[in-house]
Structures are given as C-alpha cells and as structure tokens.
Amino acid sequence: MALAGCGDTAPDEAGAAETVEAFRHPAAAAEITRRDLSRQFSASAQVEAHSRSRLAARISGTVAEVLVEAGDSVEEGALLARLDMREQRAELARIEARRAQAQSNYQRSATLHERGLLAAEAYERARADRDVVAREADLWRTRIEFGEITAPMDAMVTARHIEVGEGVQALDGLFDLTRTDLLVVRLGVSELDVAFLAPGQEIPVHLDALPGEPLPATVRHIFPLADPSSRLVTVELALPEDSWARGARPGFLARVRLAIDPRPDVLAAPAAGIAEEEGADYVYVIEDDRLQRRVIERGVTRGDWTEIVSGLEEGEVVLATNPAELTDGQAVRIVGWRG
Image (cartoon, rainbow, N blue to C red; front, top):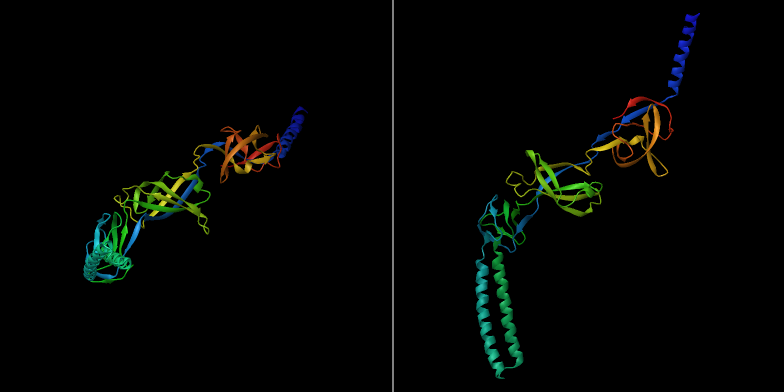
C-alpha cells in the first residue's frame, strides 16, 4: 500500500508542475550590454581642384608665341603666350602722333585764351580734342596688353588649346589652369547627417588610386542650402596641401566612411521592448522568471537597439518584445534570446 501511495503522488506533482509552467507567458529576452550605437556615414565623390580656370582670349589675333606646355607649373603673372600685335602697335603710334598734335594745339589755345585772344568755345574744343585722343591712346595700349596672355594665379597648365600661327577670336579658350595646392572633395550629405558636421572637423578620406593610409581631410565649407531635388547638402572637404605630391589628382574617386554622433560604448536595450505610458518610458526586467516594471531614460535608437541613459544596469535581463500586453509581476518563461 505504501508503494502504491507513492506511485499515485508522483504523477500529481508532475502534472502540477506542468500546469504552472503552462501559465508562464513565453517571452524573448535580451541581456543589457554595451554597444556601439554611433551613426555611420558613408559617401563617395570625385576629387576636384578647388580653383580651375579656362583662360580665354580677350582680343582677336594670330598666335605669335606659346611659352608653356600642358603640365607646366606657372606663377601668377607669368607670360603664357603672345598674339601678333604689330597692327595694333602701328595704330597706337599713329594715335600718339595725333595726341602730340592735339596737346600742342591745346597749349597754344590755352595761351591765347588767357590773353583774351581766343574765344572760350574754341578753347574748350581744343581741350576736348586733346582728351579724346588721349583716351584713344589708352584704348590701343589696353588692346596691346591683351595680346599678352598671362596666368591669373599660381597654377598648373592642364590643357593647351592653341598653336603658333592659329587665329583666335575674343573669348576663345586658350589654356586650362588648375590650382594644385588645394584639392577638394564635395560630398552630398543628408539633412539628418549634416547637423553632425562642422567646419574644421577632420575626416579621413580614402582614394581608390592610393590604397593605404587615408588622407586627413578637413571640412572646409558647408553649403547653406540643400539641393531641392535630392535634399542633400553639399559639404566640401579640403585635402592636405601635399595631396598632389602624394599622388592625388582631380577625377580620382574618394570614399568617406566615419562615425558621426559617436556613441561607441553605451548601454543598449532592444527597441521593441521599450514602451511609453503617461510620458514615461519603461521596460520589463526579468528576475526570478517574473516581470518587474522599470522606468528608464532612453537616448538615440540605431536600428533594433536603443541607448539607455539611466534606469538599467549592465548584465540585467529585459523583455525583448512589446510589453504593452503584459503586467508587472507576471510570470514568464524565456523561450529565446535577442542580440
């Protein structure tokens, strides 16, 4: 009988345990750990010269001399080419002769006018003739100056479009000049990311053509308006001054990848396990297979994870799913882990 009694009791206890287990709500859980929730930004663009110039002819003429080749470095004011200005010089000489005559007539008229021997009208006409001829001489001197093509800045000649003997018209392109001391990369940055960038901020730039160490670029300028179609803001990065010497060239592909709004080591909880009630955020901590409601302060959310500013400690276990339908103190059984 004793043996029979023991046999009857064991199934009842097992059934009771199964019944208790059946009432525990199945739950997915996650352990509170430290994570990198920095916002990652990546973009690519071409390297560009900050300053480029298509040097154009300012007067029509025939090319008499070309003094530079593509690839030459030139200083501001350096002579690049000359146009044949013989006709213009001859015209200037003729105007100068007229100017000397007009000056002589003016001086004679002035003397006579002072003595009262010449009417004021004749005197004024002589002075006007002198001034008109002087302005004509200035005009022809300017045209002759236009016959000398000079560099407007320190730069490299990246293209030459003329040869000796060619005829050029005003505004024809003669040379392409590129500054090599300032290379830039202009990135399109979203309105969400541009707020985390500032002038002077250092950003590493990788060039596909120069594998290895990135170039330490800096944010040179943030354009004031976003493009209305793409809603991207142009951010200009300045490469180091020695970038050209290190092999960087306009047209190379540049890649940028960095963490903006850095949050490299923060406590994080599953975003799905956070709810709000009466203006307060809360989660359910799982202790001894029961839920304990905990008010928290949260920070940013990156993907499936949310930064926990206060309210939780590293190593605690929390509910990883929507807590809205559960209650404080409810029994649960963990059936899966997140993270």
